[in-house]
Length: 96
Image (cartoon, rainbow, N blue to C red):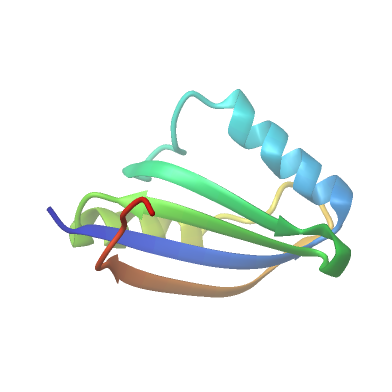
């Protein structure tokens, strides 16, 4: 079964990353209108980088979720700026 991935990169200070992670941890699922199946959050604090990877079960779910996510803004007061968004079809994922 194909899967689709949305990768969003942010510039963010440490406080913004902590705030983002707290928001993710406090939720029981994705935001309304975002039919994602899982989330992976990667960070490089030394360079002020945050990468958010969302997985979707279909291309249509990816499209719908992206529409909602594109309309969202970082939390108020957070020193965080989205710098890029890419989407992919997951071609292979296996344990090594």
